[in-house]
Amino acid sequence: MSQSISPEYPRTASIIALAGGIIITLSGVLLVAVSALVLPNLTYSNVNVPQGLTATAIPGLVSGFVGLMGIFGLVSGAVVLLSAVKLLANPGQTRTWSILILVFSVLSFIGMGGFIVGAVLGIVGGALVLKWKPSMQQA
Image (tube, rainbow, N blue to C red; front, top):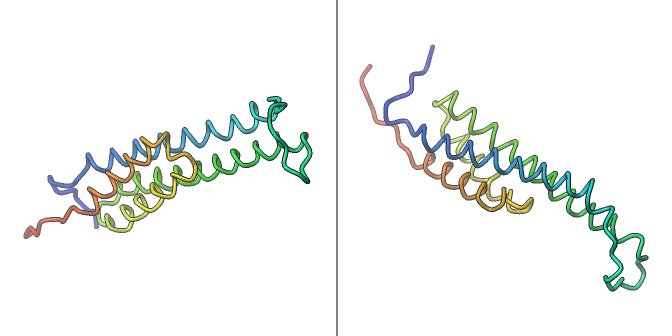
């Protein structure tokens, strides 16, 4: 049983969500790389250290926080990317995949949201696909 894509299927909206997923994933990779390679090597001599915390703990704390944001961005981007691909491959389940795209695009704001552009593209693409209603055709 093969499913055919009707001519009015929102392929463009699916591709917009796919682009959003790619951008979200790339920003997650960038955050993880910065947290692993750049932040631990910076000097934090001008930072006022809170009581109960040593100055040597600051680089690890900052790097860990940014790394967690990056990992969250990677996971969100991967889910948006996978959902957009599944949306293009299986047009019979548009509701499920578009809801996943919307939810994880909004959640990606925690991990920088693909420089905000990726999250917005994911939200717009997911919303357009969710809004789409297939026309009833006799086969």
